[in-house]
Length: 79
Length: 399
Image (cartoon, rainbow over all chains, first blue to last red; front, side, top):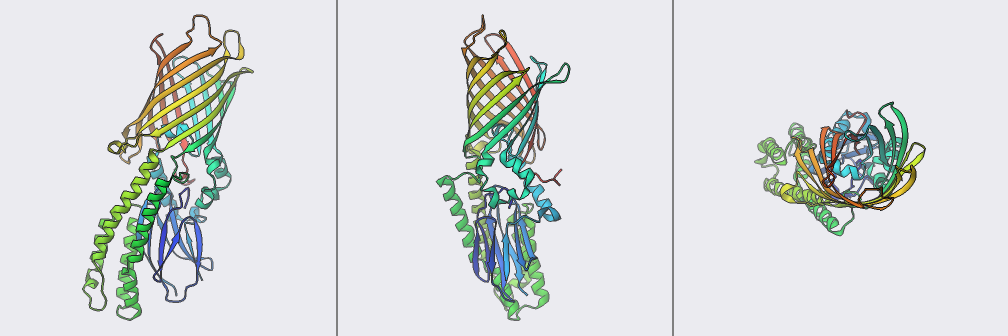
């Protein structure tokens, strides 16, 4: 996020919801078949929001938003 | 091991999609910008040419920036919000430099400097820390969390695929529909209602499937929730728009090898936040100045002292189709009291009507025209400027 407030972002992974309050990286131990599904968040300042899923430095999936409020899916299964 | 790297922008510039996103963001930021607000505190960098078109033959070239603006030029990573949020002091501290140019021979006759600090800055969402705003943000966060937690659509489909109830071809069709649902709304170009209708339509062949159950009622519930999200988000933005900004500044002007003026300014602006007129906002302006000026008769530096009080209202009169300010006017009454160095036949105090009309020529270019009228003496002064505002999110690829 650039020039943003770093407000709420929620990502659902295997039924668990993870919260991001600002630009940050969280490490998760996921195995093959584990599933990332729903995302929702808000950034009223109109800053850009980029979400990336990285394994060993390689971006496996990503999603960006520029709306103040967002809700959607990242149907992504770990191989 | 998977890293969820949310909101990290280190690779933005190399990627086309992210550049488009920044352009969109910049447009949104630009739409909210008023000349009145950035006059009080520069966003990143501001340059202007001022010319007294009625009473003066001189021009001024001015550049002002926040310390954050300088740091941004040297290190773009300062924009990333984890760094950005630590830049409160630097974003509230503005410095300026100017050149005075004599129009007749285009020579530099002097220079000016300015320092400004925002003592109170409630006009910036990432600096604002009021409990009321925090409460609204917390409420919005909780509602979004609940909706994400409650949603099972993707999980049902994933489970059906894992259990072999959904073949690979159908699974691909559905996951593509979910991706389209998200992508279509990512820049605000498609409404949640339309995106939901498209998703339901794509899922229709599977909704009645006996192999797994899709809760269609959730679609309606999610749409209602998202209306609430938008409403709360809008309320947060409106609260910022009517926030207060109090600045203290010091300006110096050195001309023809002598101090022309030293001025201390305390300025305050606050949005009135009228809901009916939220797209064309009203702002109140209050200013108190203390100036030491050159005595132009005896040619002695800083021998005159002037105290000024200014009270005004700024109003966006017209907006462009994208909602950005096109024409705004600041109407103010200015009271000047000369406490020292009164000229013969000069009155101790004067009341001046001051109007500044600002036309937005382009996204970052403003054309302010200031008219000052002294009704008692019938004096009229006019000042025309051109102002460039470089925004926080301006990207080098964003022309």
